[in-house]
Length: 169
Image 1 (cartoon, rainbow, N blue to C red):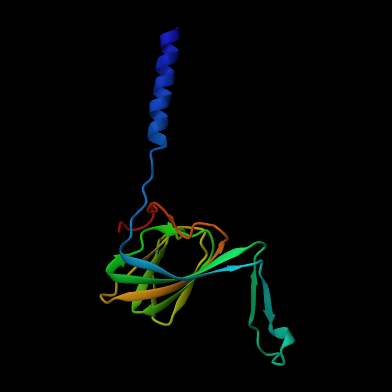
Image 2: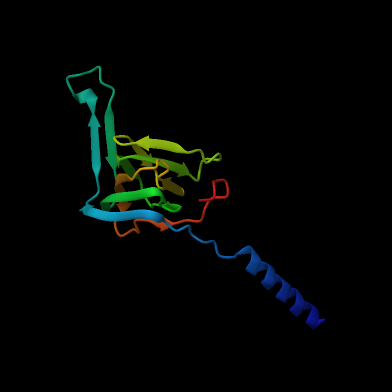
């Protein structure tokens, strides 16, 4: 009887090795990120509400809150023609502004993984809770500036595997 248990245990071990095979990150290519500045902020509570202003027709308001200390990074990204960031995520939100050229953003959380293009002067939000990839498909150099809000001490970028629903870059 004992050999049967050893064989069964060995099969379980082999099957487990196949099920938890390592998932590999997708490396960036033609993508250079340079941290320009980093600021450390105490807990934030900003609430700009136009109800307090004299212009009651305006509906714009802005809220920014954190319960603990935050690291705020400003990073400049240069993306060569056909360059890309590699699939990655961030442990907090990023405001991304295209400063030169046009970039295409792919969201791993989008079932269709549809491309969204942004040109110089446009910006977009990366909520940081999923993998995304920024690619330069424009035929000319492109640059972005990202302002990232992270919990103090958190890693700024987390490399991720390519989502199965997205193109193979």
